[in-house]
Image (tube, rainbow, N blue to C red; front, side, top):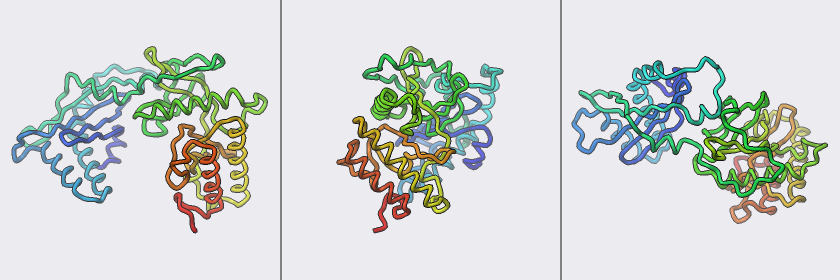
Length: 344
């Protein structure tokens, strides 16, 4: 069974974590989470099915071809899903269900979780339900976020149970959600990006405080809609959702020079507005410019850092870095720059 077939079968591969002696496959299925555990046997027999999977991974690691390793990992994942499919379906059928088609952000972030261990029985893989595997789920959940300061004007944190989950936009970190019928973006500090998220919260708070209320779309920067809490802790933030594509996703060859000139002007105006108020964008690159459905350019992602080929490391999160990135963005929009490399 291929990776794609596993997904269309209802099983969504969220993450595959590998180590020298273990492999853990995280799946979402019908609002439930399954963790498939492979542990490398110390003294395997010749027909040990688990040992054979680890042998495949070890052989693939010896090759410099990253795609070959990825294909091998997909094969191991598909094999594990196939072996566990019957057990997962039985557990899912017995799990409590809700008649509501809506899923809260709380339920999506902290789903009912089942852990299965794959063992070799007579040379075949067999799934066994584990009673406890509390360590892994915790690293898949957003950690508490210690926000240094929250302006009095900021709205009170919104409980995640009041937010409707809609779509995973980026690797379990950024979600499309709905609050009281308004589409928003939720960002969390999962996978160790707490510092970036705290910077983004700080920057968007400053923009909100300094933005002219009569011109809510200037600059074109996402609006900050407050923090999100769960179980008494802040776990992320809400910002406006911009429907559109980033500059890398667009086919610039199919856009007019007039459109590209407008985008260059809008990007420059937004950066100038920020700099005049002591705010630095940081990490300037085509992926962080969204073109919305009205063909306007928005600056997104204020977590800072830098990207090779767009902003030099020593200029990261500085005015000079923003200006360097702007120059290279202009070259990109003039179609004189591709993949961060100048044509010169």
